[in-house]
Length: 497
Image 1: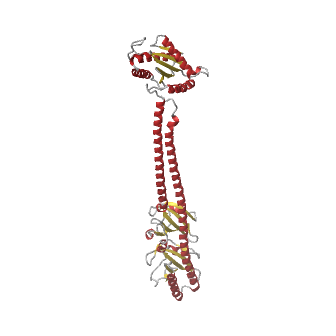
Image 2: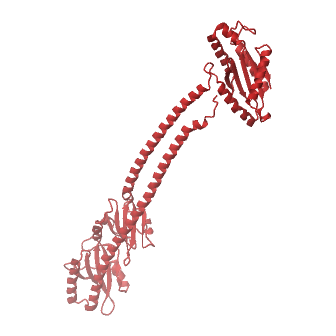
C-alpha cells in the first residue's frame, strides 16, 4: 500500500491532457466562430454588391424607356399638330427612320391608325395589310383615354420575330376621338447584350421583370426565358412591397442558389434583378476558410503532439518517482514496508479511524530465539528465515488497507484498520499458526523444534480516546501485549485493548 497521497501527482498527466484538449477545442471554436463571422461579412458585401448592380441595371432600363417615351411624345405632338395626311406621314416616316437609326436602343418606331393598320414606321417600307389591333397595347389605348405611356408585356416582333418590349402612347384625331397608337420597341437582346458587360460569374444572372412577373430580358439564356411568367414563384412574391432589397433564393429558372439584389424602376413597371451564384460568390471566403482551417489544424496537431509528449514524459517521470518512493519505503530484505512507511501509515490511519469511528488494530511480531538461530545456522540462513516469516505474515494481510511492515531487526508489524479485538485475536493466532506451518528447523529453540513467533496484538478506538492519544499509544499497547506473549512462554499471541 502507498503511504502518501499521490492523487495530485497522478492527476497531473491527465490534467495536462485536459488542458491541451481544452486549448485545442478553443482553437477550433475560435476558428469556427471566425469562419461564421467572415461568412456573414462576405454575404453582407455580396448583397450590397448585388443591390448596387440591380440599381445600375434598373437605371439603365429606365433611361432606355425614357428615351423611347420622349420620342413617342414628340411623334404624338406632331400627329396632333399636323394630322395623318399623306404629306405629314411621308415626313413622319423619314423622321421615324432617322430616330431609329440614331439610337442603338430603339428596335423600331410605328404608328397605327384607329383600326390598327400600319400608317408609319421606321422600317424602309410600310408593309401592306399589316394590322396590330389585336395587340394588348392597342386594346388598352383604345379603351383608356389618357395621355400616359403604357408598357406592355414582351412580345414577338411581327417584322423579324425577335422578342421586343413595347412602350406606347395614344393619339387622338382632330375631333378628340381615338386616332391610333404610336409605338417604340426595344429588343430584349439589347438588354442581354448590355448585361454582358457586368461580371456576375459563370452562374450569375441579371434579369429585367415587369410588374406582372413576366421576364422581359435575362442573361444568360435570354431568348429561352423571355416571356416566362414568374408571378406564382416565391422569388417574385419576395420582391413585392419593397422598392429595393436583397434576398437569397433558388432560381425557378435553372435551380441555382443565388444571392440577389432587386430594384423597382421609379417611372416604369419594371424590376431589375442582379443575382450572384452563392457558391461562386463565397468562393474567396471558402478558400480563405480552408487555408485558415488547415493552419489551425496543423497548429492543433503540433500543440496536441507536444502536449502528449510532455504527458508521456510526466508519466515516465512518475514511474521513476514511484519506483524510488517504493524503494524508500520498502525494506530491502523482506520486501515489506519499512519503519518509515509504517510510521507514516499509522499517522494517516489514526485520524481516518477518528473520522470514520472505526477501530484500529496492530500486530507486533517477534521471531522467537532469533539470535540463537543466527548463531547456529549463520546470518544468510537467518536472512532467509526472516524473509519466509515476512511472507507468511504478509499472506495474512488479506484485506484492503492492511499493511505488513518490518518494525526493526527480527520484529515485524501488521497494521489492521477496522479490526476490533475479537477479529484481532483470531488473526494473531492465524499468523502464529502460519509461521509454525513453515516448518523451518530451529534446533536451539527452547519453545519448539521449528521457528515460531510471538505476537502482541492491540486494538483501540481512536475516536473514543482523548485528544492527546495517537499512534504511539497503539504501538505501546501492542508492545505490552508482545511482552505478555513472551512472558507466557512464546509461540503464542497476546491481545490488549
